[in-house]
Length: 470
Image 1 (cartoon, rainbow, N blue to C red):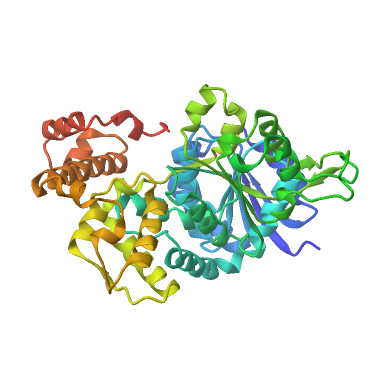
Image 2: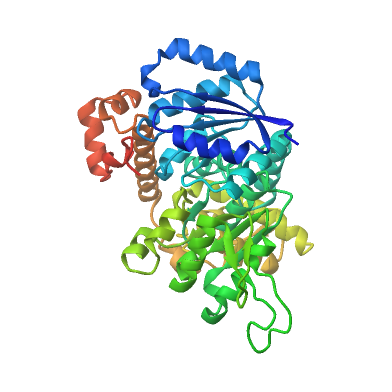
């Protein structure tokens, strides 16, 4: 029964895609199709925007599909914003050829709910459409879920580096695109993936985590896709794999770089077609699963070394995120330390309420190669060993008294923190001004020469902040 209305807006060179999309949706939705034979730039901005807004308000669709070409990203973002004004609460799905990860994120920030790349697959399109229609009223619950995730996990902090990634969760969670999370061991990649899942329309389905590096090579395919009865000697019955278990939900694949090349080919086919075969079975299975992958390596280097297939990297790297190490957000250490102190004091039923000045200075000075996970373990150990209400330096075990006696002076530590702040500030200003040094200098209230000297001092690559550079 076609009770939901979908609006299709197609522009020049995208009409063939629109026809395909129309054929997929027509049996399930009441369609309103608007095909514009000219590029977006050929329409008068004010008049066109006003007409589009009126059209969307008049039709009041359950979904809006924007079928576009990728050559004019800035115009596409404007169109998304206009469509969003006409239907603030209506999901907007952009249908477009492959974009760079930063461009996908720009569309989502502009107001797009989701992004579908070509070629179109009926199973994928319909699954996304229904999920967005059915999850339309769950925005408030998702927002509450986000707050719950942040307050009950190690996703705690207020540093700019941390907030930059956390603030993306509501934007990325609502779409269906694959996500690649990169960060050192212990930075919270799985916690971030869980937050994405539980703030998404998939929150009522399973979140299945798997460490690809922990699966024996000869069991990888069986673990992911399962097997049919009789597939091998001991297979007395069929077994579902992790993809089956994550059906309708999210599969989190940590250490994706450890997946053997033959398994990468199988995973690539699943990502492209949403189809797979169990071991020993000729029957194709389908499963709508969102894949979030993670690695503590630079995957572009892993591609160059032949460890990761290039086509798999491109398929996973739709939206890319980098979680900062703890040493780059030291101002968050007191917040995290307090959170873990409270957690383990309650767990071990001990009245430990604070850190001594020396203990906190040690926490702030440590390099934390194991990041948040190492900090958590250090505080857990300290609570267990503590003999009173205050955590002392000796309880932490991360510094000996001798080594801590050689700590750097206040002046040296202060100089390091100032340098770190300056570098991060300049990067932030350049990002906001899209690599325009003159505008960035004005925003920082510095003359251009002095600002350029700071860029040179901290060896900042200005080119990476310019539009279209990933």
